Amino acid sequence: MKHRNRLFWLIMLVAGIFLIYSTESPVPIAARNTVKQGISNVWTATTDTVSTWLNGGPRSVAKNGASIASTAPSQASQVPSATPSQAVDATPALSIVQGHQLRSVYYYHFDDDLPQSEHDVFLKAVKAYNATGIVKLVAGQGKKSDNQITFSSYKKEMSAESFGSTELGAGGPTIIVETYGSQVTVINHARASLNLSYPLQSVNDAVAMHELGHALGLDHSQSKASVMYPITQGVSQLSAGDIAGLKAIYGSR
Image 1 (tube, rainbow, N blue to C red):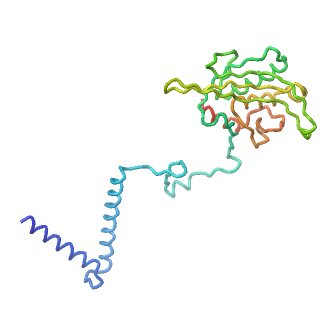
Image 2 (image 1 turned 135 degrees about the vertical axis):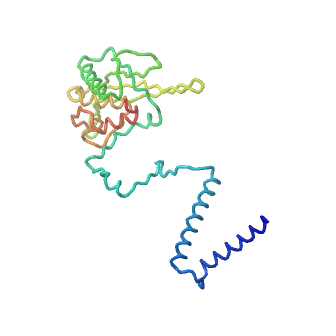
Image 3 (image 1 turned 90 degrees about the vertical axis):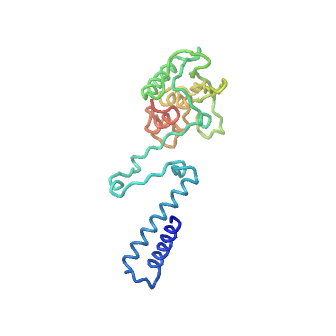
């Protein structure tokens, strides 16, 4: 009895499909189109479900590393687009610190032979970077396992081949990676120095800010409003790009 019922309904299904899709069908065209759309929707839903099941379940789609999200037109029209004046280009990080998770606390100290004038400008720079809340620079030597910054000086006369450019300072990180089993610790033993061959040009807030920025991992910026611009502009305040660059290295605090 069950087999006969199944055969009956199968015959009825084939007949129904013939009536819908046949060009000679007596069923009105509007009704046939409605049924066709319904069959198409069911078929699409069924094939999508089978495809998802065969591929291991639901999954999010990513393009260029970012999640794709759709927004309804009414919502999209309410979202303001960023203008060029609103865009912030973060000061880039030095390649040596890229890919490392640096701790934000540093201990700093001065070389014994560093003049007091250099102490003063570096202390102002320390205060400015601490004011961001992104890094914390603490006076003291610290331990070998701590991040450290040494403030120092050197003398370097510029040669005729330098074409009028003068090196006012130098700075940068030294990255130490220590592994204990599965635990990895990244330490930065950095240095920031001023060139005392040209004290009238080098011993100032702008140069100290620049070299301390290098010690913390910031690279040169293309913006003249940045303390990290390679040719000093007398800028001694961190720009929005400089702060964004620090956040990229150390995260928001």
